[in-house]
Length: 542
Image (cartoon, rainbow, N blue to C red; front, side):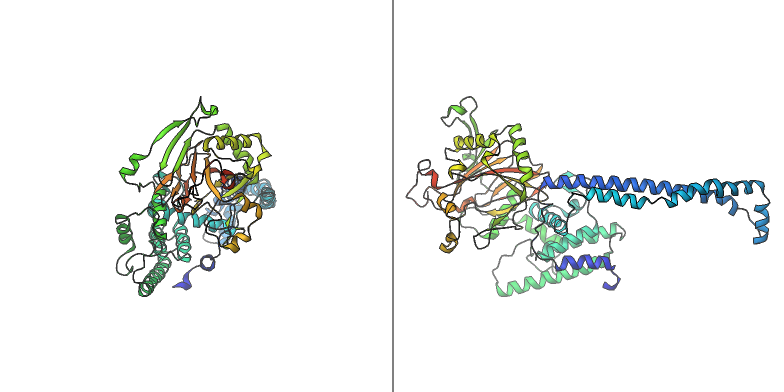
């Protein structure tokens, strides 16, 4: 059966099968670049549209010539000789013959000699000059983003394929072949449960499309292969680790040959239970993170009733006429939202300053030294030097007044303001902001002396520069809360306890952007300069 699959299709799928390296493309990772890419495509479409119009006009002239000739063909005759006598002896046919080969043919010949293709190629080359076209890694990155979004937000695959993004209906749709690509991405990542679901959706779409993009028998081979891989992996895992708790993304609880994927997925969703706090597993972290991203409430009513909102001038004349609007998101750890701390003009200034400096976000290297591109963080970031614009100094001062901490990067009290822009499915997997706690001595020894002298990141202050239409919250899986991005607002928390020990409850991540885009700006405040601003405690738990 595989021999009947088109060669080009096999090549594409083979590339998907073999590809397993991290995606490092930088076009899909930020909405600013995506907007420019859509503008680029508009120019390409304009050139192609003009080419189609010119080609259709050319074909219209040729078709008209052929249509005029039809009156000659319609003269019926028993033989070629009789036919020639009939048309050659007809004065109207004779006139139209002369007209076609003298007058009409000049137009036809001119159109045939005109090379619209070469002109279109020149225009396309002009469009491409200085422009950046997507690369292979951008295509794979966009596909991985869709797989991530479906998994995080538990999107109904049928609705997703028809353009419904968490209740928002759009005109964008997926084909059977698109869903097959998604399934291959999930399969290559070892997410066999999700792969089967994508393949099954591909099978349904192939039937509805009358096998236009691919045939159902082709998809069935992928379904069977994924089912076998899922069941074999499940059996081997259970044999080695009978009490293992498997990721619901990677595996269902029972073999798929015993119970279908759709039934098992429904049972998993209905039976979910959430645990929050310090002593939870990595699987709990992942489950809580996804639940918070979906907007589910993990805290009980008693804890929620203790959370408050209030106005506070911080005993600062700066805030007397316009006190800070504070919202308490969590008691332990203490997580706060500050509302309306940035104006619209300030937001636009920050974005404009950042756009020319945006580069693919990086994370700390695996050994704790250096930085590297990773799929755990898909966004673009820019660091804004304090002297770049007068606004930056004002924001540094404002953060200091709000938090009561020293925040001047020139004096090594804090880091430069970082701006991040998230694109397709842009996210940051759960992580801690502190850099040094828990590091081995040899790892600390490889860090720059200035970094060590500044101390660790004692706290995080995060501005939200826009409202996100769907997704994009900052989720704290161990605290059981999520902070929704609100334009002009900010989130704040301490990464270290008063004892100087790290607070594991501050594990947090950026939920994938499902629809729209996301801009944030971070100020990481360092530990050493806060000696008299945040007094230490001898109690390790404080």
